[in-house]
Length: 283
Image (cartoon, rainbow, N blue to C red; front, side, top):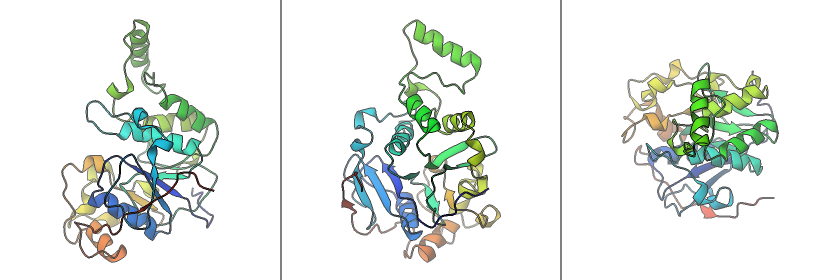
């Protein structure tokens, strides 16, 4: 069931940890702008190739750099990114999109939650808006714990974590399984507060299964078998792409970049002018 009915669009927020965007992130930002959204990119360091028209804001104003956690095994900032998006919404700054979300349609603003199932069991946070309320409060409190005992872990695993805490050897969140503050947490707290019924079906944001992550970039890939008229965006599963250097000529992504975004080549994608720096406090 779609809840997206109003014509006013969400302010879109994204985060980049690094000094240069890749071809994938540039295209996704441009797709958000093409859909009519104002895009605000939060950064900790200057980024050289932000598309023109993008607002740049200091990420420290939402989450100080020292609180940005990295997954110990992979070095990914995804853990800190999860914390960041919850805090962003606690401060009332708008909607979140991952930088591997290719937007096909605009997202009308609503005061209801906006998130979607990535499969039959999990609600993903790559497209996320949670209004002020108990669910957001619980997520923020949970994500602030450096040594959490996730309530969605199995009983034996929770017992083991409690024992480690009791003997003074708590397990750091950065050492836990991938995405401990991600889809599993969002799904758990959505169900706890009865908001899972508001979650959009798989085709809205996650039409491509993770096992088929390369399909949009392959000439032989048939994206049409997954995308539906109701599809708002395509999550491109950046973590599943490995060392992919760019799309094949004639692939869905390549055609979209050239025909819909108006860029001549893919990749590399010309990023245009650097976005202007603005304050993160908006009227």
